[in-house]
Length: 145
Image (cartoon, rainbow, N blue to C red):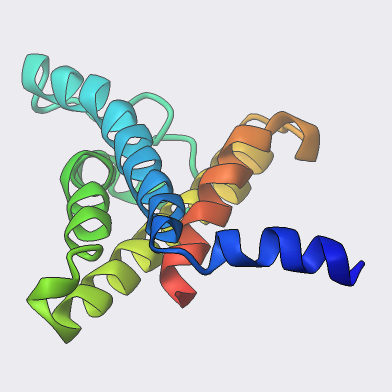
């Protein structure tokens, strides 16, 4: 096993290790952004109508239009921006704070989507939310990194 550790140990310690972090940053930002695009298109075409899936949600159904705008802003702009800008080390300690905040907002968003929408409204099980769990895991990485 020590031979294996010697062989692969140096790979994780190279400067190329930053690629793994940036691949996660880019993927998470892209995935949230791509989920926000149809939402903004819907809000632009009908600005006074909330998303149909927000209305039956337990807490968010009380203010569905505001919830629709909040989730759109989070997915389209806030999470991708904070996660990407948070990777720019040259901006100093604010980079880490932005990355953490992006991870926090992403994790909260995914927890709501998983537990309130998928489990609550749609009645799905754990096997139905594999994709959402991966986004949650990526968000948690940036929350605690």
